Image 1: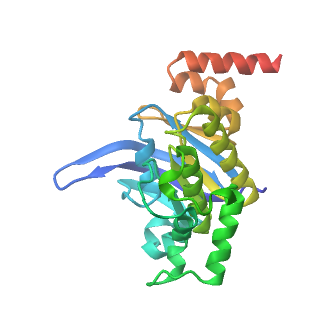
Image 2: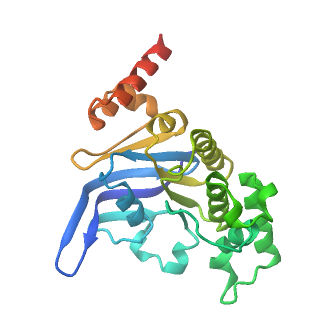
Image 3: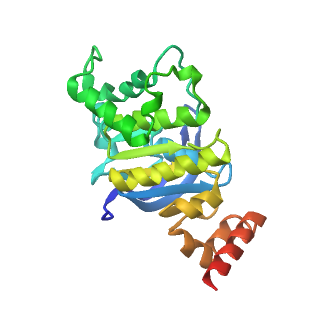
Length: 262
């Protein structure tokens, strides 16, 4: 899969504005995210990961700088246009009741179904394709409230795929999952970035897994800003130690990489 830049940040500042106060979370963020890759955003709590994702998703306005999607400034998109460009999977658990998996995935077609939300033959085909791609055909008729956390997360990913957007943002998609489910979800997202040519950008606290599975990492820190690179490069050049203050986890990972090179 050829790397094609789909998201560009230039001097971006993120944060929150209220009537009487502006709170800056991160400043001067510059980088690019490409299609066909799984890119993971990693940083300590409070480093600004969720704020960055919410800004890229247009839930928050930038405090400064530029964001471009597919070569076009984010500010120039209408809400309807954005719904066909960006799919978002948030951290919160799905609390819907009395809805089947197929019906929930079908909600991903809302940008295309018009006011009444009736699915056409083409819409049903896209829902079927998303369910099959994620590998949840066996869950199609299940009620959402009967699913495990891992199963629900797969359904939300299928819903984002059914939305048929070139870009998918995920905020902590493995937050509530056990370790095997974390591995499965990250491998699934990596496969989807390749097979569907999607630009997949997610935040995670699972540093060790991200180093093993991601194509590219964004290390984020309030003081240091962002360091972007492929996983082994960030380990070898000491970026991992600097961003994580020589934590035990960073030390273990560095030792593991050194052993693999011998």
